[in-house]
Image (tube, rainbow, N blue to C red):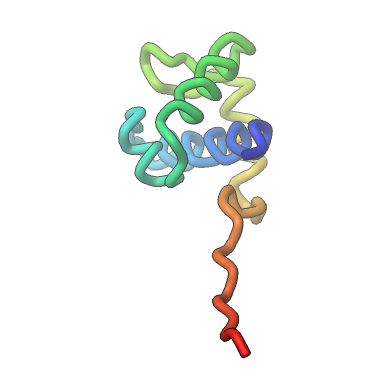
Length: 90
């Protein structure tokens, strides 16, 4: 799984929630993104260290909000690969 894509998707989801006045939790982000809890937690830690997310309040900082808001209108690639269609054996 691409960590940069997870980070972009997290920033986008947090920006949407922050615009709507909702607070997200680790559990709600895991459920919404359908990504392993470990991956979400480690990505949030990296974003926190970079100064884009305040993990204690689970809110974006100004720079994180600017990037997340810029991503709101964008269609990001899927975090998970689409399941392959089953082929019938001859």
